[in-house]
Length: 283
Image (tube, rainbow, N blue to C red; front, side, top):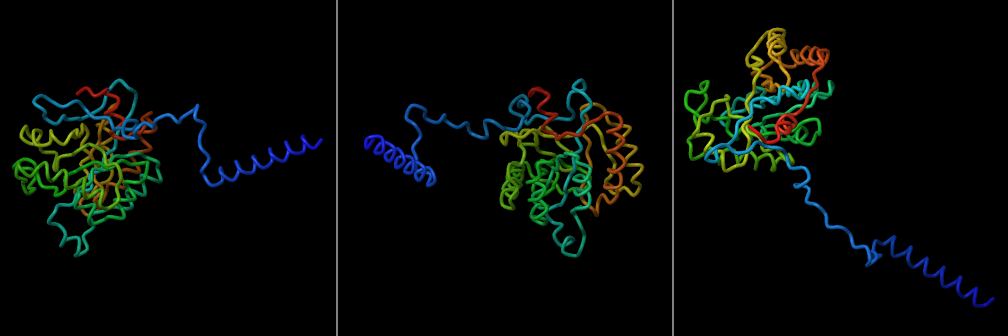
């Protein structure tokens, strides 16, 4: 009887000791079952990119596969040129929070190509967009200066500064709290040549263009913008739009027509990363 009582007391004390150690987080795992080594997050979730071009040129992506279902990517350029700070200080709005709110309300995933200068001017908005799983942030340069001559009147960036300008944008995104900006780059004005692709090759980015021009820049007729998009979209399309209120004031209204109409046609909205992933890395 005494032996049974001692056994019970011993078991109770051991149980209490184990519970206390567990509560403090100090209990050792059994030696026979060591934890498996963790897989680096980057290896699991690395964004898809295209294979580099010949001679290490940055690859260019314009649209996804036409035979992978009705998927379409809406992309929005958050433009602000490096020298436009005084205009912003005077009240010009290069942001468009109502447009971002509309995308959220409509539950439309999208890719936002952001300049570093825009992220500096609107850090709270940049951080909010970058941390929202509905969106992905990609690089539109720091300065929004052109990578070729004669590009819609934009100032031209010297070839030896192109890579640094792209890397400065990524550094700015990190500084304002945008995590994991995508390895995708959109040329300011959409202008590029072989020299620009060579300069970007070492950065590892995929240059992302488009196959549907919305015509929303400086447009005053939202219905005309919507018609242009609806007439141009095909499976795998990438649509270029803008989320700068002063330069594209009708985009939100156009979006509210575009989204339900495309959904009625059987389209689903995806981010650029999904379209690139569907290519299997092939150009």
